[in-house]
Image 1 (spheres, rainbow, N blue to C red):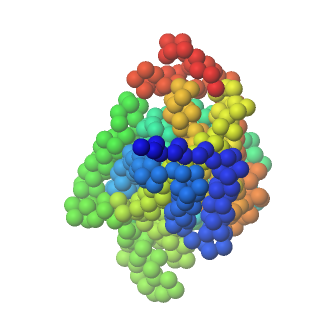
Image 2 (image 1 turned 180 degrees about the vertical axis):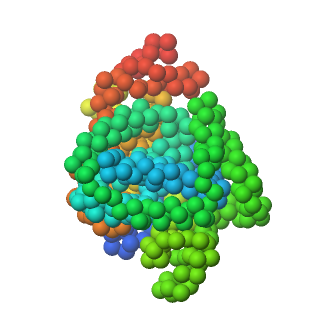
Length: 515
């Protein structure tokens, strides 16, 4: 009986060619046809699969099994995202998110103006899990205030993006914060704790920069009209109280106690549900919010009046809101954009993208394309610092050629996961590096979806705000520097736990493994 032939190993040239072909398809979808990339990723998987089956000789059953196994790796991230949806909805309805935004807006002062947008955008993004929503709402309001103070728009936008991406990166509600550990093979809270090692010092550096740069604008006078309008409408529609912070604080405490992410997030949901019920929200309404997300009421009613001045005046009078009608209209539209979110169904776009990305990545992996490219990348690498640098550079290359932050996390994560396992580094090191570069650098590439969005919504070209997006480009530099210094390196323990060590694997974990 004839033995089945072993599949051929693809050449480096063929592997790069397949990768670039898919990158070209993605670029066309994003830049020319302005469409989502889900189907393109399936086409990419088909292209890689066709080459893998008909040219390299891989059996279809092997590729299909690889895809299923790859998708299973991301299942925890999908489950967490399906939990984050109801969490966001209930945290908005119960006043948790509105309170964080309300008190964040209260710290504005000319003496610390550049620090204030950094902090406010960090809080809003941390509360919503979305740097995009933060930039498109609070970011626009802060930009208008900055222009009144004479602060250059590129500088303000860079600070807004720095704050928004810090909050997004560190938020358990963010899709990328859930995707990175899912790809790397670690859990959500391990991932967030790992990011504190690089993002924490970087954020402190950025705070110092904003305080220093802000001194020259400290004598200006702020126009508080828009900020007060936002706060007024928020306080009329939602329960605003420091007590609402109990929900996120409990989640943080459970995280610090190393409790699993899913139960911790559900505890946060149940606490916010109790708040909402006490405030008078019906059980049926809460169930609908958990399923479909929060739909603003008062702010939507104000925003819906449009050019009807009489209707707008009546709504404001009925709710005892005494602010300029035009400012109220603009502020209400911002609140609707910020608060109309959440719900289990809202996560379907992201989860379907994760499934498509894993389908493409797993096909590339099973057919040997990723392994060949990884071997070429790993040849000159002889240290942990070199490996972290390679991951960060690979993410940046994907940001440039694939034009999407999700793929810039999924592709390098799939490629490097086995190598991190081989040398004994804890997977939180990989997930941290994926976010340090894949998430943060995406907004610095003009044709990347993130760069294009922020440039469009804030009205400043990418290359103009790039020098001032301090957090985004300093974080990868800090991550690489700290790793070469042997700081914040974690190895995989005997039971899979993270073990803090230096540049080499701790002796108690076993013999040293060469890179």
